[in-house]
Length: 59
Image (cartoon, rainbow, N blue to C red; front, side, top):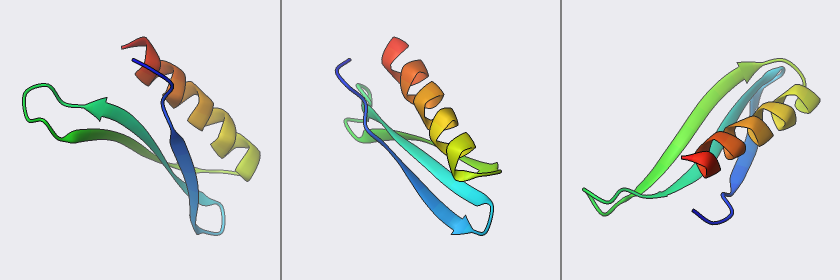
C-alpha cells in the first residue's frame, strides 16, 4: 500500500481518537478505517498514531 494517512482528535481532556485510512476493502469496495481511543497526552497520541500507520502500511 502507499502512504497511509491518519488523524488525532481530542475527544475530551486527555482522551484522543486516532484514525488511520487503511485503503479500500477489496471485497466490499469501500474504504477501511482503523480507529482507536487512547487516554494520555498529545505526545502519546501522536506516537501511537505513528505505530498504527506503520501497522496499516505493513499489511
